[in-house]
Amino acid sequence: MTTPLDAAPPGAAAAQAARRTPLVVVLLVAATFVVILNETIMVNAIPRLAADFDVSLRAAQWLSTIFLLTMAAVIPVTGWFLRQVTTRQAYALAMTVFCAGTAVCAAAPLFEVLLLGRVVQAAGTAVMMPLLMTTLMTVVPEADRGRVMGTVTLAMSCAPALGPAVSGLILGFGGWRLIFVAVLPVAALVTIGGLRQLVDVGEREPAAIDWTSVVLAAAGFATLVYGLSEIGGASAVVPAVCGGLGVLLVAAFVVRQLSLQRSGSPLLDLRALSHRTYTLSLLVMAVGFMAMLGAMILLPVYLQQVRGLSPLRTGLLVMPGGLAMGLLGPQVGKVFDRVGSRPVVVPGAVAILAALVVLARIEPTTPYAALLGAHVLMMVGLAAVFTPVFALGLGSLPPHLYSHGSSILGTLQQVAGAVGTAAVVVIADARTRGLMADGVAGVDAVVGGLRCAFLAGAGAAVLVVALAALLPARVSATEG
Image 1 (cartoon, rainbow, N blue to C red):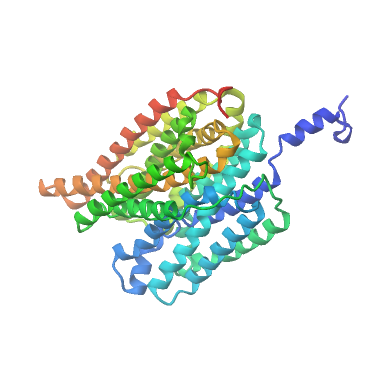
Image 2: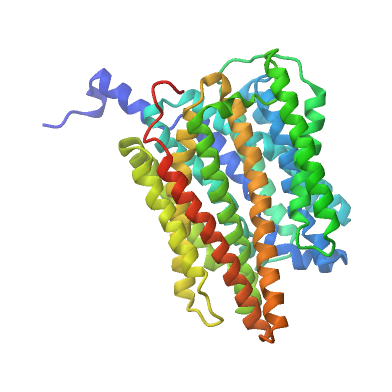
């Protein structure tokens, strides 16, 4: 005989309730998905923007670069900021700023105004990422974090993967302004709905801010990311100078934080890095993120420059991979909750490696089915890696370091994305030029350059496999 749901034992009802994703996390995931989608949503619109504003393609590319720069500059401050305000206040500010930036972009009469709008958008986005992660770690029990973190993967990793596909679809119906016109009402509805339902989580920890740290973090990480983004450009001096200056400023920021830790009030508490599992998880995520963004840059280049596909068709071809990554995230999380990290992460890392090896063998006539299969395999592998590693890494920290750990993770993602993008562009370009100098025809030279860059990505995936094998199955009793 079955027992009616309303007659279930109190203990069973409590367990069932515990397995539900908290509403506050669902709302934050929805908002974070919308804002992070914009990190890569301009990729397919660059040629049209260059023509409309009469600027070079490299100048138009700044609409993506400026987003990364702003994120890298703002995220280090969010660890401190999230301890000064309530959950609702942080959410309201982040989403209001994002909506304002989106409105500016949609109405921008000048290219400079559009750049400003992207800066404002990114400032709001930079707050949402750590807010989501910190809230999740606070309200979700450890035994259920894998499943819930799988849902978070939809926002943290699937959204950037879907950005080019979404923009490709939108551009099939109108101009680049339609991208922002489509995003704005969705963001506004998510903001209003969230403010109606959101409740405050955790306790405020008011503390004075060290403005020297703010300046060093903003200038250091932004300059470093800018230097990396300029690699492969017309000048070799700019990336060398900016990259070197960025490294020096980041080093000064680290020294400053280590000094402030003795007084108990650092802007970004680097003691999170003393937890081995967290640091190892950071490395896995950083290298995996580099491989993902590298492939996101290379595959559209191949499809559009070599195969002649339109942005719309390119978006349709890469969309299944992004959807697979998002849909599998919660299922991967459930498996992680049952069996631990290594049985999930190691096969996922091997899948990423296999996909990149396949892409490293592309030809000008490679069947689209093979390209689609390799892309889906890579995205499934990334879901199998990111979901458990997010939960394992942050779960190894004590609660008072959650906001700092989330901020370090977000900052490293931006830097890793810049490194991955710069690396594949430089490798592909150098190999293409070398082949052309040897007399190889244009298209074949481009394909040869892309193969070389994909092979470098496969090398990074080997490192992901090795690091994944070192991860513990679960957070040890001495951590978290």
